[in-house]
Image 1 (tube, rainbow, N blue to C red):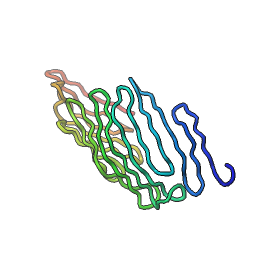
Image 2: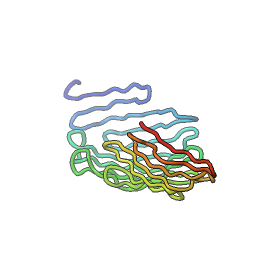
Image 3: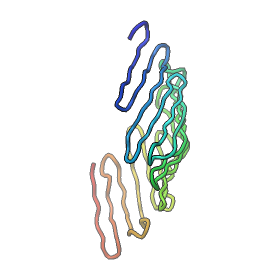
Image 4: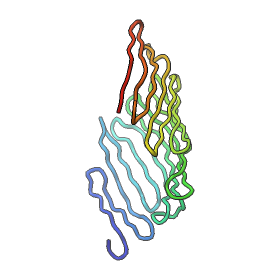
Length: 195
C-alpha cells in the first residue's frame, strides 16, 4: 500500500500479474491451470471488466465474458457478469451462455443455459435463482445445483446408456449422495453412499 493505492502482486505458480485498487480495481492477471493432456490459460482485465479462458492441448475451445463489480471495487450497484463459449475434452463437451445479476451487492440470480454432452447422453443446465436446474436429454435424470450454499441434488430413474442396466437412485451432496438400486439382467444391488 503506497500513495493511496493498494497493489497485489501475483507471482504464480498459476496466477500472475498485478491488481491495483484506487477508487476501483485495475490491472491485468493471467493464469495457467494444467490438466490432463493440456490445460487452461486465461487473462482478466480488472479495469475493463473482461476475461477469457482458452483450452490448450487436448482441451479445445474458449470461454469469455465481462463483469462489473459492486462499489467500492467497481462502478456497479450490484454484481453483473456474463460468460459464454464452449470447451471440449475428448468426446466430452460443454457449451453455454450465462448471465449473473445482483441488484445490490453480490447475491443475485443466474439466467441462461448450457449443455454438457457426450456421444451417449447430454445434460441441460438452466440458470434459475442462485443455481442451475439439471435435466437429462436422453437420460431419465433431473437435479438441482445450488451455488450458495453449495448443494447438488439429483434423481435418476430408468435405463442407463449403452445397455448397462437400470438405475433408480437419488441423492444430495453434501449428505447422502447415493441411495437406490441398480439392476443388470437378473443381478440387483442396493446402493448407499454418504459424504
